[in-house]
Length: 442
Image (cartoon, rainbow, N blue to C red; front, side, top):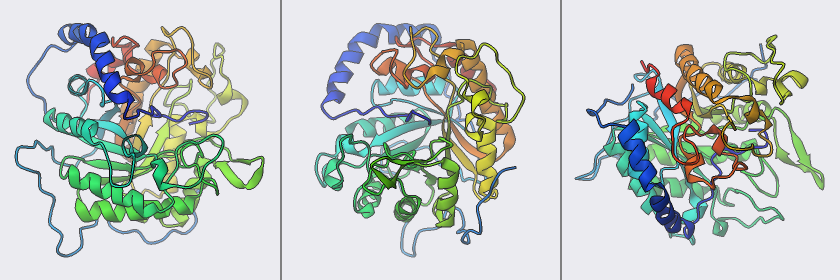
């Protein structure tokens, strides 16, 4: 997103156990209250079931490519609970939400289940838990995958951020980087799929790679280089578990391109539509089952097109009116991606939602639009967006951003993740929580 990278909660190995202890103490009473008052147990539930287009693209491979001859179908270890993946052609639409499931895992997954959602998104920051080659602390992710499956939820993992030992480029403002050898990322995904065989249902390959803060390399952002990463990842994932839905890394809809002032050849962020077309021209659609897309709603309703005569005289943030562009509009952005792909792949909206700073005593820098959305508008827009995506038919999965980052983050008005959260800083439900719980989910 413009000036914002969703899901950038950099948990380190040292902070994780400390955070668990602190939050268990601080939230135990609140969690018990919310559970008793808001989540009375019930019976187990079944999981819920005119713009430019790219030039000529390579021929597409079929969805769900079968493993090479000799590979066996994934099996689940004895004693483990697994929820089956529903093939793309059978499940019409999947309702999901992004969570910080590494903390209070049991309670978090029960919240998702009580919301009536069938999917949960968890970001996997490779860098935070791999201190050296061959070393990986899987413990937090083991819990997320296990508890989610026991709760009847399907799991999508978004895997990002290579560890420092895997790349050589360093600048004055180090941010998320891919490894120098892209095969290392594919190898890590292979280890992940082997560990969670049959219990991870979708994998998003990287995140917002059209921004250098997510793709920090000497050459800058590079669509062709990303497609090579996606190709290696796709082949490894499918060879181990052909049922996993491979999602291309969703781009940030920045709607503009900029280069490094000190090095004009280095692109620091690229218009997502330009990036997407270049990636497609390099064969991207051959290596994904679903096209990842992000949109953060800004301060207009989800059904307003970028060139509609919509007015809001009270809006403080005026981007939609002062600099008209597809990127401001939720519906226009998703329609563009569907048209640009020629309908050959469904969309997986891995992050969407409306931010409201109401009740937080301020708003983060870059999120001025959050002050324009009331809590009720956040609730209305989140629900309407789910309903629209279901109706359109070209969206396969949709993950609301986010369930609980306001509660589990720094609890500051400057936290860029908090205004999107549907729980408040103390764990209480915001109006969007209730609205999504009560929303019909056909």
